[in-house]
Image (cartoon, rainbow, N blue to C red; front, side, top):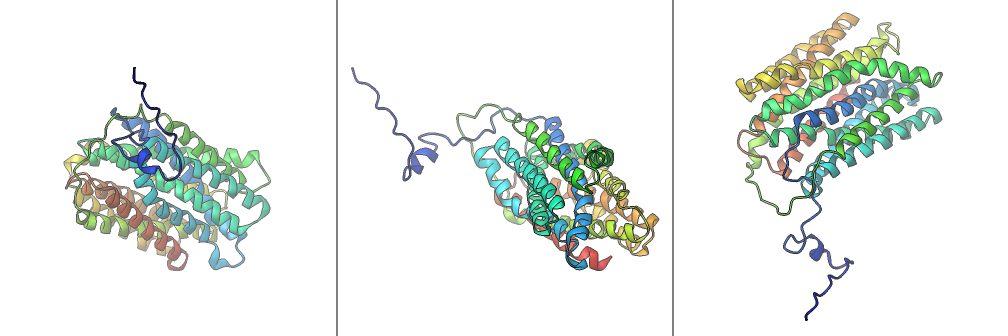
Length: 374
């Protein structure tokens, strides 16, 4: 009787034997079972909670730790740089190892980034704060792929991506209260509680991520992909909206402090802005497919442009109005751009990485210029 020959253990030089699907499929955990939009929205909501707290804390942390005033926005810009850097690995890791591995890695980076920011604030280390912000941004870059996950699995990509963004509304509204409670716990260390809260929020997001995927699928079926050129215009309009939104948001905390608003109260203004970023997604989740994505993208960009003169007015009322309008414009433009890129077919991994990477790149430029422009 012939006995089967046992498989050789993996070793260096035998990567083909491990990765070639005809021998053994890669450890992709996407599975054949679809993931509910509710689960994706919940994971995104925890990431938004961390984003809300970090967006308010990082400009203030930069002003507190930087050796020069012009360096105050560097931690916030570092967060956006991390998000841009994460776009390519987030896209490729998702298809190679699955949604659970990709989103879990992003959340883990957020936990590490929040913890390092805590250490930076206690030890008063500006470089540590920038590195922690970079890791928090990388977590943010991974979390924005929740909307692509929903859009790719749905026949209504605009509405599905908007449905995921609705998860950010409650997180943004709860952000100031939770941040205030966290700050009280660690008083008198300013911003340390907020940084710790960001780490905890990503830990909760990690819990959601590891529960997303079912068992690995036995086979892989290639999907037809749209040409890379199909993302050109939606990426361009979306990038302009992200530029304007981040230019206004990065300059707003210090502008509000200059107007006499207390530093602790800035969390409330930023949370109001973040709530405005996700509130339009609620009606768009139901009505998004009735409006052409190009019109949504153009309408959102128009709202972003409308916020610019309000920010220049320089009063607490006009700055607040600018934060609300630019947040709403960003949301509408982002939903429109996301739905638009799926009109020509499923985008390739490269296309999704280029799209999100471009959005975050323009966001970085906007954040870097925010303190100068406003």
